[in-house]
Length: 417
Image (cartoon, rainbow, N blue to C red):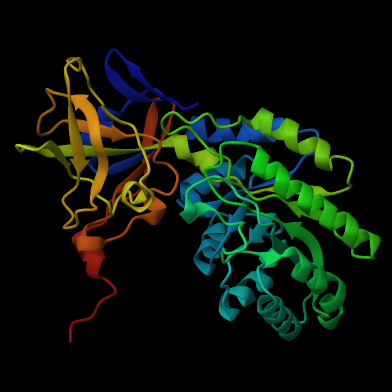
């Protein structure tokens, strides 16, 4: 599952004690395991080996250049959602034909940059977007491939903020409109070619049922479109595979592949996957130092130097992250406590009512587990806090892959009156 293990009561990332990293680099700090990243990517690659899909890592989960480069070197493409992510993908030398571009609000500037670079295709979310891509491609004298992202109206059974395939969500196009776009409108746009159907139903989905429901609708649509002359060559089934944060029992890569492949392997379609959390979620932790222990008549507060600006998921989604001391020789006696940060918001917590060792004290280091996805990538400078350092571990060595911000970094783009 991951390469963070307790050895002699000390937490290691691969072969490096994380307490050593905290002592040398400081906290807060994100620590990632390269071996875990590659293991999770290769599990998907192996599970689907029979049909050799294009696996496009979803950069929004964690966009650090070194993380993305490790995966690109292993053969991954990249799923991007902004001009900034396109810039990052180009920075690490990803093959342009391994890049797919999602998001509901691509600007003309972003579209032009992607068309010029020659990405594989855009996942189109509306008729106006299709018109915009055609206009840009015509001006540049290029032909651009696109996929139509459908909204299959499927209940993903996940948190309401990360479900994307219900009819009331902003994502995708209803199936009837998608048919019209492909069969009736596409001839009006000489500089685009609709070659794919894209469907992504949400994130942190534990069961295969919603995926299969959406996939069956997608395949039926493709068969109908082909029967009427449309040339659909690709099916992009997005990402969304869940991971273990606490007591979840998500499907494995093998289980997912066994359910998906029978529906598509004889359909003459190139399959594209867009995993993010599945690859990087359990490959990273957030290290934080205890600043104070505050006991009140009502409860205990463990105040740490990481905060909601470093890891937003608990306050945004009510998300659970396991929290453990990185050195735990005397951890038997426990007491419930809230783990909170220094940000001036009551919503600034990393955990509530968590049973943690009674003998914890100021200066001890805690590891907030399963923080590799949507951790640093959603962090901010709220309260003028510097964003954390990022570290990548490979075997018995580690290297800093993002320096901790300085105070001058906080104001470098600002001007005084």
